Structures are given as C-alpha cells and as structure tokens.
Image (cartoon, rainbow, N blue to C red; front, side, top):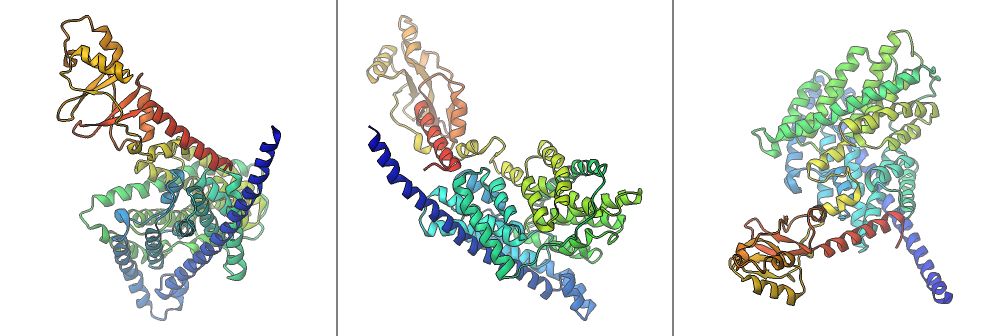
Length: 583
C-alpha cells in the first residue's frame, strides 16, 4: 500500500525541484533585462534634463540666461504636447502605472500588454525629460513588470509564472534605481503580490540581486543621496518622531487627494485630452521661473533639504506647497510619471521644516537629518502603502540603523492612520475608483473580475405564463426540477415559480394558469455580472438557480448555485496553490 505513494512522491519531487530552479533562472534573466532597461531609462532622463536645460547642472553650464528662461518656459509645454500625442495610442488615453500592474496580478489577469508598456515608458521618459514634476519610479516599475510579463508570454508559461515574472521585473527595477535589493524584494511582495509565497520569493530575490549588481557594479549607478553618520537622538525626540508620523499621514492624504481632485477637474476642462499635459507644462514653466526647485523629480531639492540650514523655514514651506501643487497638476492633467519621487521630496521638506522648528525652539540642532528622514517616510509610506519597503529604502540608502529606527517610529503611526483616514495607498484608491476594490483582499478582487458568461446554463424549465397549473406541475415533476421560469413568446422574463408553491395551489380552482399564481421573489443577474455579485445574491435566495436577463428583461438562462460554488472553489484553490507554493 505504501509503495505507490512513495514512488509517486519520488517521481514528482525531482520535477518540482527542476521547475523551481527554472523559475529562479527565469527570475534572474528577467532581473537582468529589467535592470538594464531601468538604468538606461534613468540615464536618458538625466541626459535630457541636461540637454534641455532643465537640471541645475544644465542651467549652470548654459552661457545665456535668456536661453535658460526660454527653456524653462517652453520645454515643459513641448514635452506636454509630445506626451499628449503618445497617449492617443494608449487604451483609455492615459499612461499605465503601477496601479495597472497591481490590478493585473491581484485579479490574476497577468499579461501586461507590451504596446501599452512601451508607450507608457516613452511617455514617462518625455515627461521626466521635459521637467514635469513627476517621479521616475512609477514608469520604471511598470516597465520592469511589462518586460517580465512579455518574457513569460514568449516562453508560453502559465498565469502563475506570469505573476511571478511581473514581480521579478518590479523588484529588479526598484533594486537598480535605488541600489536597494532588499527594498525591491519587499516592494514586489508587499505592494504587487501581497503575499510571501516561497515559490515566488526565490525568483524575485534573484531578480533583485541581479538588478542590484548590474546597477551598482557593472554600470556604476549612483545612490539617490548620501548621508554621513548622524548624532544619536535624545529619548524625548522619539515622541516627536511619532508625532511627525501622525502629521505626515495628513500631508500624505492631502497629496493623494490633490492628485485625484486635479484628475477629476481635468475631465471638466473644455480642452482635448491630448492638450491637457501642455497646459500643465505651461503653468509649471511659469511657476518654475519663480521657484525652479519644483521642476523634475526634485533630486537636488531632496539632497539640499537633508542639510541643516540649506533652506529657511519659509523657503521649506513654500517649496513644499508648490511641489505638492505642481505634482498634482502634472499627474492630474496627464503627464506620465510616478508619485513616489515627489512624495520623497515633499516628505523630506516636511520633515526638514519640523526639524527647523525644533532647532529654533532650542533642541535637535545635531539631529536635523532625523526629522528630514522621518518626514520622508511618514509621507511616502502611506502614498505607496508600503511601510516595510520605505524603511528598507532608508536603511539601504543610509546604512544607518539609528536613522531606520527613528523612521520606524514615524511609520508606526503614519501608515495605519493614513489607511484609516484615506485608504491603503494611492494605487488602491485609484483602482477603487475604477471599480476594483482591494480592501477586502485578493480573493474578492479575483471573483469581481470573473464574469458569469461561462456559467450560464440553458438546462432549466421554462414555461409560458398562460401554462395551466396542472401542466406546469407535470412538467416540473418529469424534469426533476423544483422551480420553473416564466418566459413569454417574446423571451421576456416574468418571474420564478416553485413546485412546492404550485402544489399548494393545486386545489385552488381560481388559479388555473401560472400568470395568476404568486411569483417567488427572486433576484436576477446581468450576463456581465461578476462571480462575486452572484455569490452575494445567493445569500438572498433559497433555490436552485438565479435567472440571467439582459437590459430588456430577455431571459438568457440560469446560473445554478452548484456552478457558482464550484467556480468559487476553483478560484480559491488556484489562489491557494499560487500563494502557498503548491503545484
């Protein structure tokens, strides 16, 4: 009795190991491709900023100040025009973002379209190159995910492998851009996959390591910023770091809702969609003549904001407000880019402002950098919905355990508070507005995406409303069914009757036809209803099936309770296998 089981295990085990090792090799390959693309993207943005006199270095190298002024005014406008044209080739007329990556993985759709990924990357490149106040990590995440998905399709692998390679591309892009492989691994699991399956962990880790090695060693990609070892904060300052987290959650909420509100406002503008980025570019350029710090990703602003005394309190507040408004303007009116880099800048400015105020009150002069970093994570973690990733970025960029511990104090309050007040992240809020609610978990998201089309059955008893009562009872008895659906000659649905109710009326001579019989209250479903909605409707009935009708109330069939239950178990089992490494 034991031998067949033992032999079965011994034959399956080597195959499982080979498949696992193949996934690790595949993850490494995806990581290499995604890292090269990410570093090329970043270097191209830097080159364009210098060439188009958008970066501080490019402006300093320009001999003619008039040329710099013209570039500040015109380059964002021309970039906006180019971006608007690129978006005409994209579905929904908008660039694809990390929110689309999350939706593809959480609903198990996978297969990110290559054309949309390439056009979105080009749009992000044009936006960042032209100085739009957007981030580069959003386009990089989507580009890495698209490359991972494309490689899976070329190799004709399954849906589960597609999700894993998407996560591999994301992890490699983050690792390459930040020189932070641990943050890349955790981001892919925390934000994209939203589970820590061992089957996915090794390929994602391999991708992040390859991305890090290529970016930091072979291509000498520099870190985002460098911080020397700071002084140790006083115990009472940790209370301030905690309070900074609470206030940072409010700043993050203001930032998120400014972006969303500007997007809603843009839809009401009497301006073609393709011209909206140019309008944002014009307003951005005019404002940048006054405060040039708002142009681009803001890396120079980020670096200066971490230096004590580089900005005064009034300057910090001004740049913070203008950077927040500029980012909302650019993203809301259609420039392509991420929200993460600007959130880093806004959060750092917020923290630096708090540090400046504390220093003016007679404390915290030597721990200024702690306030800047705590403000950075307090704003960034709620925007991303990734507190662990944000903490790891701090640790990997600074190498300071003391700074990371202080940042932990801020994140402890910032992320839960923002989640309660505003939502888990900007991405989740965007998806919820598109009809995909991830707040109840991945299983619900999958069921909401599954349509009922394949579950509709025509094996049901349908009767004309004028059918005599005795004939209806006979039809149901012969068919072995407990209920029938009243459908007239024009295929219009009139309701449901049950065999039990008809039997109870058999002796009632005043009800000779079904039209005169009371109908059993029963909800109906649209053919495009989701599996989740069907399960929700099952709670309202006790019967065999639910009728499916179109907008004209034409009867299309029924969905049986057993079919709904089987579909639910099928998808639940698929998620279990994917998230726990089985199969």
